[in-house]
Length: 120
Image (cartoon, rainbow, N blue to C red; front, side, top):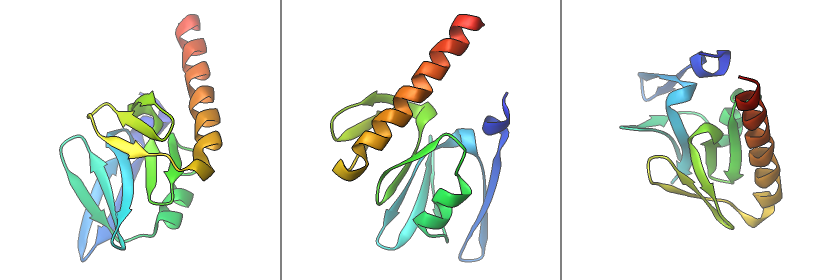
């Protein structure tokens, strides 16, 4: 496994510690002032702001698709006009203001992945 997949995060919420691997997080979203990290089987509350999380996840395979959403690109299946469909069947919005940035980042990731597959 590569470095990104093994990256570990320990977050706190109301006295509880949440320990997650980056590869297990499908997306993170803000709802009613609480941030949630969604994995395949469970959702965890986190006591951080979206901006703090975005900064902490910078350089990893996460992209801010909307004011309230950070998505792990590796779990993306379909990128449509205003949404992303994830491997777990959930849909995440892509705001108009972030659409171009999302498309460029996703295209770059897929080109890089395609090149790796050709070489391997």
